[in-house]
Length: 117
Length: 347
Image (cartoon, rainbow over all chains, first blue to last red; front, side, top):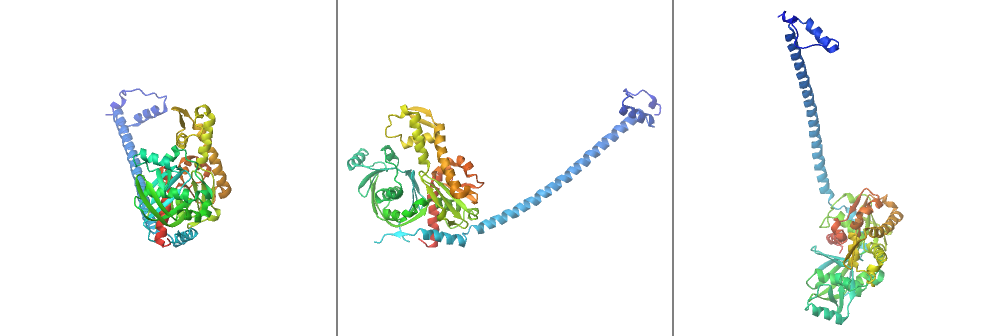
């Protein structure tokens, strides 16, 4: 396998570019073949990416669960407020004694007139 | 109080409105003209004994009342004390009774008036407490008005919004908190009536001005006659109220079968009325700053609603009823008040 290391790699690296020069150094330092080194590097990259995505998804899920919980709590508060408002409306529908007194005053200001006969 | 029938009456300067306890409603243009006996007989004969309900004989005197009266060039509606006479106000109410009730009987009338006409309450009652023998559409009925009570027209709009249908509960509680100003835009009168917190009617600060849709219509008609002088020259006695109303509403006037645009003239005429309303609102009610709500009532309120909003400059402006039937808001509210009076035993 160590012989493969010195075989020509199936692509060209531009060593003037820092990233590609670094890749070349990794290949040189590797105890495995170029191909094996590249495959392992790609697998590591894929794992890291998958882990990142999973971590992001978990964080997103956590965030959504928190939002969902907040919405549930808000909905519950709305339910309570609505029930209280309905109860208040039901009670508030009754004309207040003060209002009724004022209506009597309106009636007094407009006395009834009837026929004498 | 034991009466056979109850009539809620709002004899507005532009439209006569009535409502019964059972909820039936009636409205017709405020136009009345006394007819000569011979003319009336001729009309009845032409209709083979059953003329339209507008042709009526009240206590033996023939009249044409309502829409047909406008075709007969009825004179302008009476105002002031001259209006509340048996031969005018009484006749209009008798005709309203006959249109709403097809049986004779004792009647209680709950009659509305603008705040400025409060001084005529007794005159109103005296013009109505009578026997009314009405011949209409080939039939006849006798109404004996035995009881009369009055109400302030703008207050009707307030009660219509505030009270439930049966009148004994709040329909909306928010209006009972803080002061409200009722702005009643009628045909010939604009009234503003403050209602203080808890439903106290502030008669001391109530007021009416002889403004209204009719004044805008008159301005508009004069403009039409001036701009289209050649086309309107033949109408020496003035354009028909119906034609002017339609032109004002649509912005198109039809003269001798030809249509002319008149949006600008209508807008100008309404602007003059709005300026007057604005001046009254600012001068007498501090621009509405101290009021928690402004309630718009009367037939003119819906017509002017969009243009009144910026003038009122208030965050809580309510129409006293649906836009299309806002002219009925006052009688509807008065019926609720009557029911509340009844439940309180103050009738």
